[in-house]
Length: 109
Image 1 (cartoon, rainbow, N blue to C red):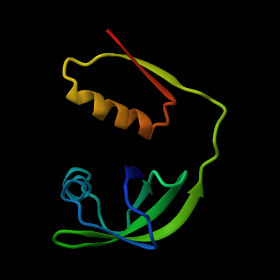
Image 2: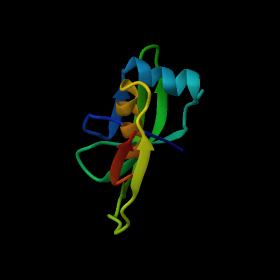
Image 3: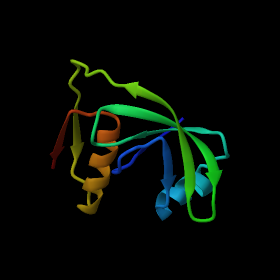
C-alpha cells in the first residue's frame, strides 16, 4: 500500500485535485480502482486507509475504510547525513525522513 501526506483534514470521502498527486497515483504508480492507500496529515498521529473509488479527468475520489491509531514509540532515531551539494534538496530530504519517523536530523560537512 502506498502512503501519502496530505495537509488537509481527512474526511469520509476524499477528493484529490492536486495535479502532482494525481499524476503520481495514475501515471507513475498506475493505480486502478479499488486499490487501497494510506493517507496521513500533520493534525493527528493517525493513518487513514482509503480505497480508490473513481478516477475522473482531473481528480481522484477515495472512500474511507479504516483508521489506524499510531502508538508513540520510545525509540528515538537519529539520522546523520552530509550536506547536499544543492540546498534545495534539504527540504526534500527532511520530508522523506519525516515520513519514516526519523526523530532527529543532523547535517554535517
